[in-house]
Image (cartoon, rainbow, N blue to C red; front, side):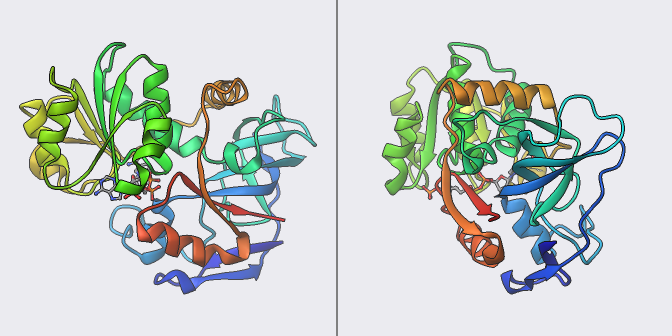
Length: 302
Ligand SMILES: NC(=O)c1ccc[n+]([C@@H]2O[C@H](COP(=O)([O-])OP(=O)(O)OC[C@H]3O[C@@H](n4cnc5c(N)ncnc54)[C@H](OP(=O)(O)O)[C@@H]3O)[C@@H](O)[C@H]2O)c1
């Protein structure tokens, strides 16, 4: 099968299309003919070698962990998915490929595109984990740093659906985009504390830092301490005494099914920032590294 293989850590050019063996499903696994793959900043960090101290990756490898596609083979002891089912979820093996093995998938609703479906697993799981740690309750005000990206667009919508009032930060070009997701938008950078105080004079009850771009000191000032602040991306967290959650991801087929239902009913709209053919994975990594994706970057597999 065709895949995009990483044989050496380095720049995007190290992502090279190649022929590799098609994987065979083991117990509990299905094989999915992949139609769309989510590209995550995590993939970019692994590719560069930056994750080696915390997440060593043997090479060669195929990156990627979220897929949408059609089940084309079923291993032993699989209850549920059958050959021909259109599914989305988590891949057990590298996703930047024509075929991937998976043990946690759910049916993709008919009206939900491959690209939109694949924008959900990582973003929603990360949001669930962070909001769980924050212990948010309906009626509270949540500040989300990085509301316009792959995780942020889903985080805002799930938080609003949970009855929270959300103030979300983004660049000037993404203010209307963040407002359309249901948040009160504001820009990041200099003067953030004053802008948030003007928008939420009664204060913010919790902070979800998705961006990891240095907004923790402002968050601490707004909260009056480190309580109820969670970051998924700021390496200064430990030094500042802020909770960092880095997983492991809680993969759940039941949760995927709930997300599919929300999306099918129009209660959750996955946002796709841009799509790239699988062979252009390097371009997708350049776009991700630029740091201004509006929603999820997606590889499509013809
Ligand atoms: N720990 C975990 O479990 C976990 C899980 C998933 C992701 N992550 C990490 O979380 C981070 C975000 O992931 P993602 O998929 O959402 O990334 P992404 O889609 O690449 O995020 C891009 C977004 O970041 C926004 N942004 C850029 N600079 C910003 C700033 N200074 N303040 C606020 N927003 C800013 C951009 O908005 P504008 O274009 O408007 O500037 C853009 O919408 C990554 O570092 C990723 O590795 C961690």
